[in-house]
Amino acid sequence: MYLRIKTLLIVIFWFSKLSISQIFNCEVQVIAPTLQNNPANEEIFSSLKNAMIEYINFGYNWTNDKFEQHEQIDVSFLLTLNSKSGNDFSGKLQITSQRPVFNSDYKSLLMSYIDKNVTFKYIRNSPIQYFEGQHVDNLADILAYYIYMILGYDYDSFSLEGGTPYFNKADQILSICQSASEPGWKAPDGDGSNNRFWLIQNALQPQFTSLRKTFYNYHMSGLDQCYINRDTCIKEITSSINDLLEIHKSRPSSLNMQLFFNAKYEELIKIYLPTSPTERNKIYNLVSQLDPSRIKAYNKLK
Image (cartoon, rainbow, N blue to C red; front, side):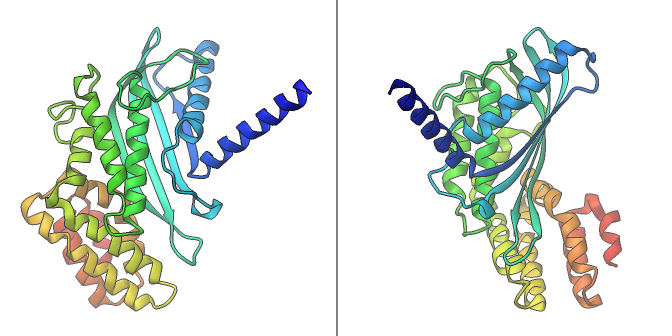
């Protein structure tokens, strides 16, 4: 009888974990190209990778919404370790996320960002645990922060400012980590305006409202309508990009504008290459103002 109850509890436990895992289709890589290649290190890196996957998929109930398999958010975390001293690690974390385009097999990149100030402690074969409202484990807080940023951008792409609850969660983590000794959480840290502090501050500031409007219109009125009428889709995307000029006038080259074009510049080129010269010129004139650092790439549209 005891064995049957124990088996039932195990089945219930794993089904509950599977229900949480429906949020993300998650890929994790941990690499250390500059560190010594030995079996002990390889075991630690493998353990860390598995702990990250377990944490992202099962470590916390990140949202109460239920996700069907086809609604899962494709996310990728690439952790590159540059130094190791005992249980102390430092490196950089590349975060990407995608969302499906309606009635197609195409997935659109929503977020592509590299955090260069990742430091943390990790002991082999130990889980990563998130303590909401406390700064206990820096890696847990960094991952939780980016999970909420990913959710914020994903929800923003489906409803106007729909990601606000998740951006607020990321902001709460930032606030709690203001007293942390690790870099990346405070305004003057690391790369100046290119860190976790400014990423979420800009996302929530009223000055960036038009960016969130663009994020919604670009996807819902643009990409998601391409299967109905491609010409209308193109016009809506052009109009959504045009709305970014408002931010460009007051905050040119801001981090969040860079983040948007990190995700979208290749897609924009692919979308507009087959269009008429008139449409190509419109988008070229816009992106050459808004994203001048990639002018060589955009020259394909001329």
